[in-house]
Image 1: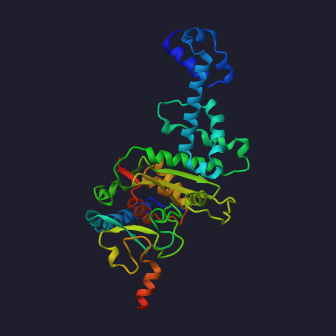
Image 2: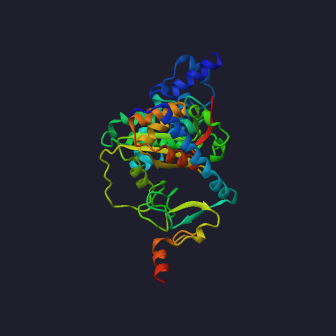
Length: 102
Length: 262
């Protein structure tokens, strides 16, 4: 692939702009703090180890909405999500489907 | 005997075969052979302390190897290692740098071809754990950079960030080691190229699988290649490489400490 200087420059500028624009919302969240949110993360997208210790890797979640897997979210967001829980073992995909049915 | 020569002689006696402790060199013996307890008995106490302490240090610095092989296996290997590899600095957290290489050639571990790479993972996680803390580059910091300087940016990785690749599935073996309950599932450890990023979160090392392209891009950044050159190089080999996702993900994960421009 022959990449011209111009193409590289454009790619970098686009990525930088997208990242900087993302700063306003991401860092506004940081000022409010973050909290662990269980039960809402997709498979492979968790941040760290499972609450029950079955693994201790980021990105090792095997199923969507597992209530032992978590990711950091800005404070206050987790409670607004279907299946989201601030405590491990609660919420998750099972709770989400029950809520839907209910 | 001068102090530095006496210290060197003491070290030589400690890290030699036990026969040298039982029959110390004459000059050394003349210097230390005082008191009621025979010199060889006193030297054996020192030697025993050193061997026990250093093998315990290796057990602490290689926890995954300990889980995989058992404490006795590791301590036996450690005792063989330490005589040829005494500490070179007064920081035991950093003792064992060449232990993974030793394990690669350790005949009693020849049936565990992945063990040396697991030891490398242990070592890098240990480095991550004890690395000095530094600032995290934030998205808003990028807004301070003039667009015309973008291609010259050098992204500095945080001091705690480490990279490792292996022909074995280190991530799966690592997960297996972290399981609190006995798992009777058989783990397939047939060669499977793995690329791993190690970062520190709340003072604990965390591992994350990388794509081959991401791993190689990180290596270029680690070499402090300017962004334009690094990106050009990586896109030649991996046209599918997604720099937008890469930048957003790894700034969010606080992987970088600074973006320097020339």
